[in-house]
Length: 127
Image (cartoon, rainbow, N blue to C red):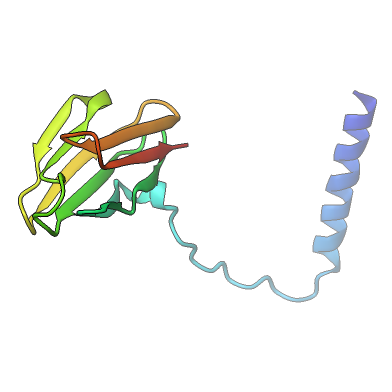
């Protein structure tokens, strides 16, 4: 306890000394960028072609909404349907039309998404 109090007093004394030694006026605070999580729902554009999802994984945050926008660009392959098993979501992906899915992950881990035949696979990696 004595060590913590001594350190706190030392830190406060140093901070006061630095402030007292400064003859210059402190520069005006510059606006900072708002973190993406605080700016509202996160969005990720995902292209679906015969080889799979591009990108095949995106990052999300626990408790933060994320909107996945899927766009199928070919009739080849099995990407005509999207399945998010853990969310009980099953959607058709019409050719060259965006399909939005919004999720709010409740825990860290992976939220998998696949095609209707489970051959194409991707995930939201939740931190």
